[in-house]
Length: 398
Image 1 (tube, rainbow, N blue to C red):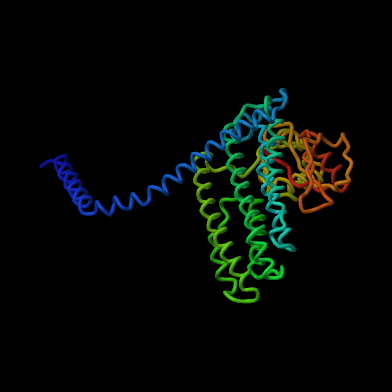
Image 2: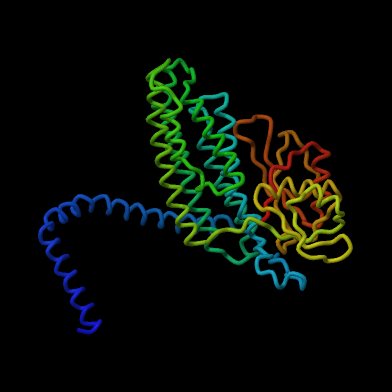
């Protein structure tokens, strides 16, 4: 008997065993399928609804948040033509702001929970600021840069999930949560303190890493392992335990889902940004050892790699304080910066172009200014803003 005949007999045997198993277990399998069918149908309907909401949202943003033409992508120089990861779309400096707004909202919420119970947080105000920011930034990119489906799908996905999360928390905290607070005479229990700790850990984590890498399962375990089962205001304690357990459990599942979808769609994002700099003495690199020289462009001028995301901001500030000037960042000549300023602050038009401003929801004295600046003037503007007492919140490095 040859090898092919042996494989045929083996496959036939496996088929016979599978048929026998299905015949014996058929009723149970069919019963299980009937029980799971409603859940599968609901999941498919929810997925379809989410897709429809996404399509409608992108369409509304595109139609209702129109901008002007002009502008375009930055040019690739001869010195960078062999670096495929050097240039990034200039539109990303605008479209990354709504994503970072969610980070700022989590920071604001964590700071609020340090001294307040969660029912008082302005959840719906934060939702409104996210979508207003997305609309404002779409006006800046529409007609100037190619439409990037991936960027807009990502902003709708995270915006929708942010909206659902905050809306559900607002509804719960202002009904059952408020009753629970009343029963505890508005005294915080140790679960409230634990929730604040987790909120601060999460807010700090998403500054440097994607949100879906945060381990909510570890915090779920800590909720039950690090807080007592009984204590003062037992009703509030158990209400918090059950609510936070559900919250952390859902967040853990959602993070796993988004991580899988992100890896399949975008791969693993790079953690560095290329930039061309001038007037860069050796002392600037000594003070910033994580800035790596790639090649020499001229006297004290270099093509460098700088850590991306939140670390880019303090690094750029440090370089500017040492007289370093940016020629371009990721192949682009324009960049967006957000600043924190008093609400009474008077803007000088020579300090950049304000795209829009928003009040900090939990601070009656401060506002966030979102500014467009030329990369070549960034060093001078950073110095001017610092002298006027403004806090550079973030430089949106594409």
